[in-house]
Length: 282
Length: 358
Image (cartoon, rainbow over all chains, first blue to last red; front, side, top):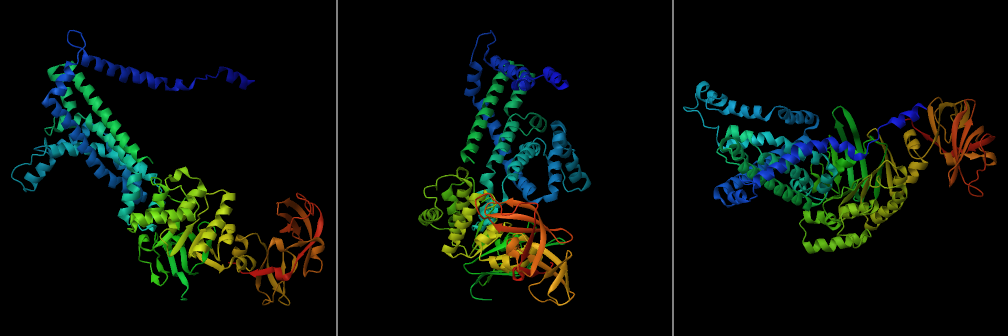
């Protein structure tokens, strides 16, 4: 009897019901702002619809340069992250053994700190009167003048890589983990050297992980603002310009237009990368 | 070392820290024969195979292929073929590309690769499947591709690591015959690792029964089955009824579980003896008349198993259990004896084997 009663009052929602909170949240804080943003970019000051801002951005050599620089910077960061992240991921999965937990911790620990704190860390280290320069000039006396490291492109790229490389490592490691080592052994028995085995078997089978990592890193680098704003480096990227349009110029329409352009670039790259990865079709 | 020895393990030992996986193992595989390493998991059979393949380096000892000491060589320079339990076909390569892999690594021409791939596909009866991907094939077909891939380079030795473990029973049996047939036709020296005694019996010329990192007995399947040297071998291959006791008076008898049991041979008086009798050698009812070992027993269980009937008997004052198998007689589904009756049983002394306690 108790059982029957319980089932009569049991709340039995349809499957989609569980998705509702997430969907509502996304509509309120993601879809609606995006729509608003898009509308703002095509609404002229008098209220009529116009594509003038897009024409302005896409026909202006300066703005085109900014777009190219944004994509180039993100691409460079992505490539560096692959080059640094792959060996780490490989070591983590195949060699580290009982140390792998520690490596994963070391990878994830920085993510627990806010990105602003980590970026300030670079400033503390490399500022004119920062730790490194103080050490080199005052304490060791190796240099006459402090090095100018802050506000160089190299440092900005290094800081972005520093922030983003864990995403790459974890994406690649997850896929490497799933590759049966006996595939590699099978290749070796058939006469493949370690290097050939890597090129023929391990690398193609881990492209999925590289793809996922590259998409993550590229997207975040594309939209990264804090690192570039704090460490400079002379880069002129879309996020910095959007910030400028909002805060300095107060041209919301132009800022919205740039945001939309940035979004389209991101989606286009996502599509391309997905296609590249799919092409390998495993 | 005889001229026909294709693979030889010379006092090979493998330690992992303080534990010894393989201890001072000697093994010779004659050219063109198939030797099975048979044993329970953890007996060192896989480690032995991996040392032959070159994935593990022996702590001491040598691995010789033909006359060449390959111990210091990496796997890719040993010219071996290997089939893994899960086949480990390259999932991102077609069947043809999988088979051609070894040829490509060896730098053979494209034309030569194509000819060889076609020949191998024929050999394993997968004509026209070259363009498919491994995941599109059934387990048995994948298994055949793995075999073709490992044979395409005419390896000096073929290594089979539980090659049929992932297949269901019916397919496993037909593949056992198929692999054995291919192996004999090509006359390729083969080392098989398995924990399945039937597989070892079906496929091998010689079986090396392993336990605790050692080879307990090496011999032809019939020899291993009929003349086990140790209790472990007797019990691991098939089922055995084991009697242990001290040799009495003449040295032809032991007292085990309160029964006097006649031995097949004379042993020193007072020595501990372990005797093994196969269930199918135990005779029940009138068949037991006149045998040296004839005991009254109680039939506690009778099971019909298709080709034979399995009986559980309680014998002697301690009512110890004894297994007896008999060919099925009469109409299908009938047992000659039902459970719950008392009967005579016995076995010929020459059907029992004295084994050592490991």
